[in-house]
Length: 124
Image 1 (cartoon, rainbow, N blue to C red):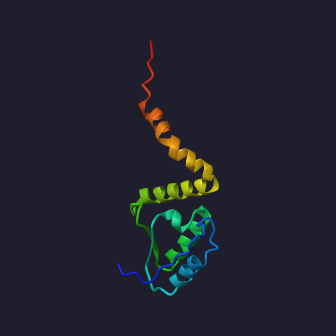
Image 2 (cartoon, one colour):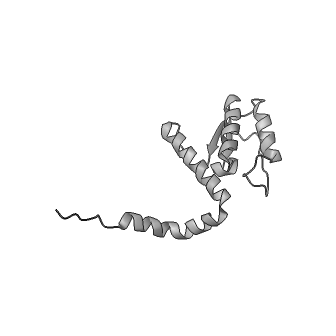
Image 3 (cartoon, rainbow, N blue to C red):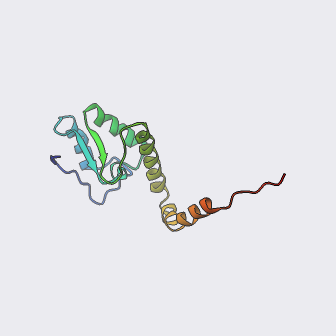
């Protein structure tokens, strides 16, 4: 893989598409100079499902694929569902930052409670 360019919007949230370097990347994709956009995680691309879908469609028309370095997402139908879940989770936590802090602290406890509960007993 050869890196053609880097597009970095420092200190700008991915909640919005009002990011100069992001918009430059979308514009540059039409010139067919690259065929992959490599992001650390999908939430670095967009934290809004509508923006993500719209800009992915534009990139796809331009022959460009978005690839996450951290998230191993397959090409098949299960990859479609995983991307949808990751995008939904990103948008949710972007809208509710306090929820993210709580989930980091309490999620392991809640999962333990869910998976470790004894099976119900039935008497006949």
